[in-house]
Image (cartoon, rainbow, N blue to C red; front, side, top):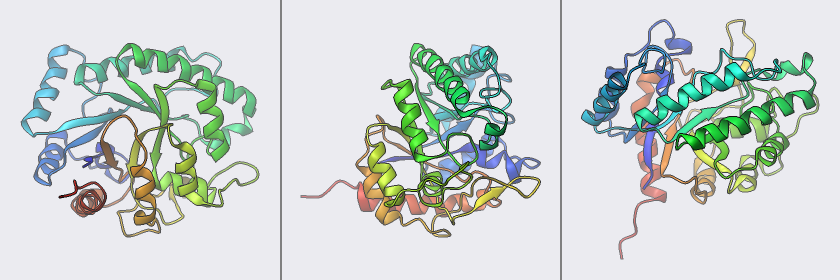
Length: 308
């Protein structure tokens, strides 16, 4: 059976930016719904390295989780205020990453998430070769820092960030080339990248076998998994422009999970967590229960131990 968590950022950003759900309330509800844990969005108002600077403060969060019978499945580090592709000096990004690794270690978190920070339009300002070198060099440095802190590093590819074509994934994985570094596979992003080609600069690159083909080709390189639905559309930013994949509750989109899940089940990410991601969904709080029920059914269908 897979342990099920959900990303806490669904209750703090986007539609919840001006009405965030406090961390204690989130923990209470997830425990009531039978979640095994949560994936921490490490930014205010939830626990984060800037607000919780002491060992004592961080231990209090560990104890808070224990009281609710929950564990952390990972950390989404707050790196979006940093520069990665549009600078030749990644020292500030790397320092921020290290700070989040220390925070993760103190909370007992085993995996840390990153992305390429800048949108795909960055190639209007920075040539792709320079961008690639900056990303892969910085990721390689950060991966060593993650290892030093006992963490694996997972890169979430998506339409909203640069290097969002299937071939980009393999190029970056090959360039960093370490078993501690892998991709975070999100079923909505996988759908939008492999089947829609959303926000891909230049000629679109999609796969004949869609996201199932992408999952198969990424086998051995996926070290974290997010599940959620997709309807071929992107979430819109404040200007009404496409930003990143829309994350719809299960059953409200087009992803055939009975086709996709067996292929994800064949993946060994190195742990047993599967995480629900309701990022930017306007009714994420209300949709949490139905998403957990859907995941419970998948668990029973594909992972329940057989009775002889």
